[in-house]
Image (cartoon, rainbow, N blue to C red; front, top):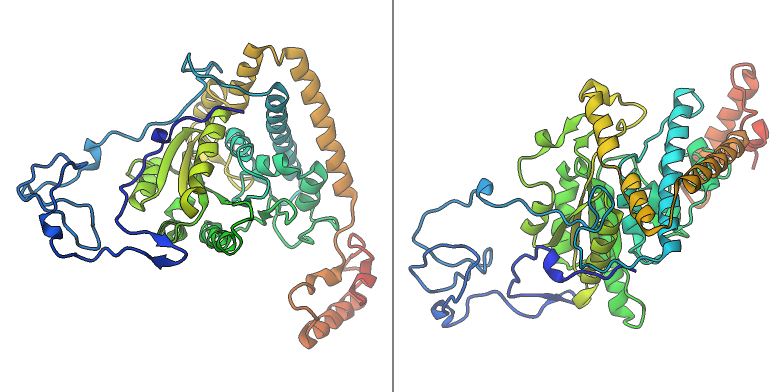
Length: 463
């Protein structure tokens, strides 16, 4: 375990003089008799006060009066700092900091990151060979997934985007599970209805990934509110939170703002974890926003916020541990974690990133700062890892990934009837007619419709 830091690492917005408790306001922000004579003893803004009375307008309850006309200018404020434990050479930056990590646990994190990295390379090449329709890699962001996953409770609910493969791996998603979904075979819990990389697992408390950008963020806020109400109804149950992942590009969607606002006003126990990798497909972050990243938006919504080095798995883990603790305090509250990284891969197999950025820039990031390499250096400094272990582990993991690949590719697709099922509890008359029509077309043009790759072939349409 890593000894957590202090609450001071988080930028905490001002406390408003009202609270939500069990869905009711227990203190009003209305103007009270005599409150205009309340003396201001301190203020977070360095304005000269000419009227020592507190403004009690409901929309800005902590704002003091001033006769100085001055605009708050973003470029006059310091950027939010980025929390880091390890430097780029894998050494602990704060010499007197006690970083206690069990050797077996560290090796597990490292192997999980290696597994994701190796699988990404194999599946990317498989798509280029035409054996897979689509794929998205997590290269450069493995530390965010594993670091945060290791700090969450298995009962916490996950809403992922599409670079959280490491979280699935850490929680128990097997290589066969990954491959079955990627090949949409009959072992895929989604029954082949989703694009590749859209994983999900009810058993692991991980909602299925969806394609539309940012839709998971308000859904996650709603799920967190449901967890809050469940705990109020049954206080003896262990408190749980929601962890919602998204990229900085998704934070440009309106869903992001709606989700943060409702989570803040309803005090929902949710961790918003933003992977800021510098690019929203082909749009660099400098063209996405002009403010101080995504973290500054959390403060604007009244949310405790921290920025962390996403290439430092120990920093991500420690920040997530503390964020989860804050998230569950006082009945629940949202926390925003912005994890900084660099997307060294193409956005997906549908993208050629060298059309909008220099290849030398990508190679420089690979060489200079990589979450896997940094953590390997840390383990080597502890005597837990060496070059021989590296070669042997990579060889074993590659064989395991390829074996799962071959098994999944050889499996049949789900039966044709599965296209019509799981929408209604019973098939409608319209669905029954469509099944019959599809069967008639296959029977009429057997040379045009080869259905042998589906389980039970043509018979797969039968009830």
